[in-house]
Length: 260
Image (cartoon, rainbow, N blue to C red; front, side):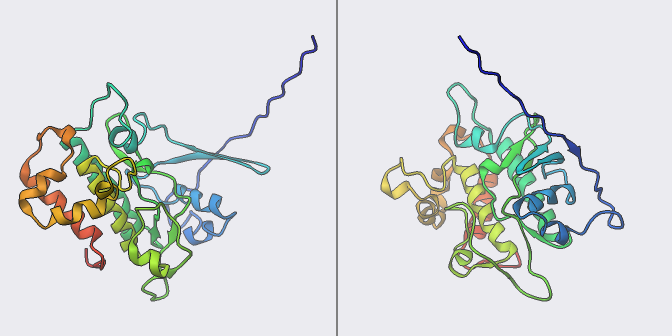
């Protein structure tokens, strides 16, 4: 029998050392022009925050690209909320609110601290990674885009993102602002509260779209508890539930309010 020889390829690993100091780092807007999407992901090395996944290094071996991020022991929010495996404990209310709060802080940093402003454009449960203590960190900046500049109110761009999470006004006009991310946050926050996917074709017709399903319930305070995830077993402070739903409702309202 003839044996086929297997060959293996090794790619060199390059640690990133761009740093955070404004006088030493490359300008974010320059990085966004480098090598398309790969350049965008390298933005992680320039915007550093506790609730953003750290980019440790990369390999650029010919046409093969490899990014090395910090290890996130507890996988993604999606794994614990929407793809719960048999025998796995569902997230309790405290953990859910901790994750929502941390993810919001990550977005706030990108919108209001990063210079220039960065719009994430792909905020969803699978992109929120969790460490061993369930601290959330935003990952995958492949669709991120610089915010409007030069006094403009919005950036014009081809509409991209994940169906169900994109703001309606962005889908209709292609005009991108940080409020597009705020809408996506509202959708994910509602998923966190309800334990339901924004789009779930396995449910009865009236419940397949989370936003449409929740809309009439938002109008009746006595129905608020019906939105809460049954897996919570009613173990949550009602005041906290009402506050969380109020925030989610404000984020997903059709006319985005830039003052939120």
